[in-house]
Amino acid sequence: MRKPAWHIFGLFAGFLGCATLLVFDSLAQSYPVKSIRIVVGYTPGGSTDTLARMVGQKLSENLGQPVIVENRPGASSSIANERVSKSPADGYTLLLLAYSAATLPALNSKLPYDLERDFAPIVLVALGTSVLVVNPSVPARNVAELIELARSQPGKLNFGSDGVGSSATLAGGLFNLMAKVNIIEVPYKGAAEVVVATVAGQIEMSFPSLAASRSLLESGKLRPLAVTSGERSALLPSIPTLNESGLPGYDRTSWYGLVAPAGVPKEIVARLNAVISKAVSTPEMKESFNKQGLEPQTRSPEAFAALIHSEIVQSAKLIQATGVKAK
Image (cartoon, rainbow, N blue to C red; front, side):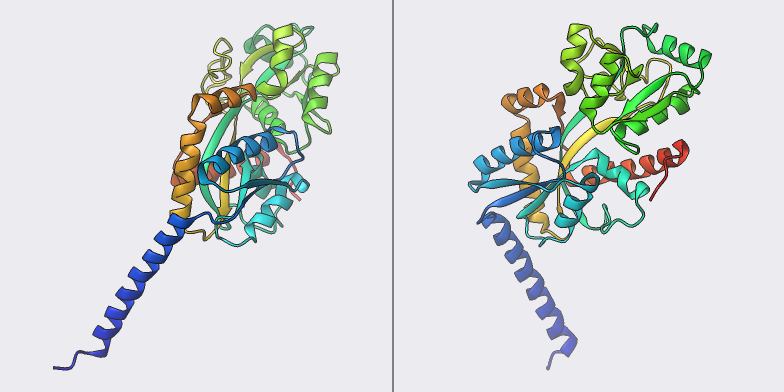
């Protein structure tokens, strides 16, 4: 009896599906066959660049191919983000994505890419925390005293940021909202200038990264009041969080992770996730990360995607609440 045409088509579709899976599996097994490029949206020497080079070295050692770090600074990393979003989805062009990228959609409605649609999250690499610091001349030994001081002098205290809309803008804005105070933002050209201005007493307080402030904390040139992460940092265990210092729910954590253009085969994503997760979990890498004020953190691609989504939503709400103007 002659079989119906649909039956033949079903057999063909099943064969085609199996063949496709075999191709993807073969691709993942042979990957990589050439050098890999990690694009960074910042200039050489910064925390994102340094992290990319550390991860790149381990990738090269484990995959047996050169890993090149390509710096594409400008437009708050959106130039690099666009470049990767439009690259072939073959696993050979990756992006070291920094937490600040999650604020860009709310600040610029005309971005040439969509952070969730156009990228495939691979793995979260590291978490970092910022520190609420004050100049030693400020008569506040803890967060409660700082809030009391700010309420007694509305609009008189200042906090520094490395540009309007930066992570420091949001950290300070969230502090103002939750503490019900009015501490004025003073933008500078970069994070280093903010730290210098705080030490010099030009501004009363700021939210520098642990890496940027550690030596100044140890020398007493800055006074730490709290860390911005939801939980205490393993690198500063004696410093309380803002969450436990009268602002329950306060949590502003910096994060860094690798993404690829959307459409990259899941088998390649899984392999990169496994290799990088293993690499950053070694004592050697943990020590290197700690020197940068970072703690190694790895998650599945799905969990990293969920983090990116939640950060975009939270940043948009905070930008709207703080009145930062979108472009």
